[in-house]
Image (cartoon, rainbow, N blue to C red; front, side, top):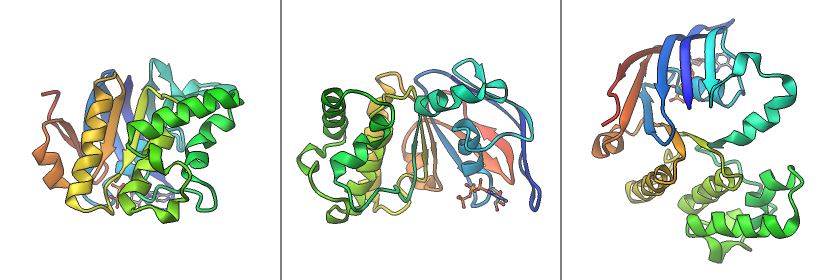
Length: 222
Ligand SMILES: Nc1ncnc2c1ncn2[C@@H]1O[C@H](COP(=O)(O)OP(=O)(O)OP(=O)(O)O)[C@@H](O)[C@H]1O
């Protein structure tokens, strides 16, 4: 589902943020991406989401080479890849329902179908009862779950999460990971960047480790 072939990413003012990265992730795998701050985790995720392009090498998602993807296919690609961020980036003047509906509204899906899918996504993250609240009325963990529902609502086959539990206490972090583990069972491919070594070590998932832009370890599938 995700394949990197000798990928480099160079920022002109910084040098190589990623060097010679090679790995493959199969459909339905749940993989952690770890490494020190600045190791290149977010850069790697951004290449998969096509928010950045590699300086060298190839990134393939679902068999398609992102380097040769025609411009008109980029919106379709972005819908295939749900992204979850640490700072969840919710719109504070809209309800939880509207925040989750946003990715569907731009695709022009019928409003009845939007309602059905948003309710299903909120139900999956346990927030159906808070659909009419605004994000500021929610706790940090609940806000993060709204961000997850928004990433899920378009049913993307790939979910990327960048420090999804960065601001949460250990109990909430565990809850979020348990939620991710449930997606794995419905065939979603998940790549989760995190510094939370304790959490990574407590859960038996394949782990890719970056160090100064190089892939220094891959524990392989368990
Ligand atoms: N847009 C950019 N322009 C220039 N340099 C960048 C840019 N984005 C990232 N970098 C640099 O690339 C390196 C990798 O950054 P990246 O954000 O991928 O690391 P990270 O492992 O996600 O770090 P953190 O855990 O702190 O979020 C860093 O040295 C960073 O300063």
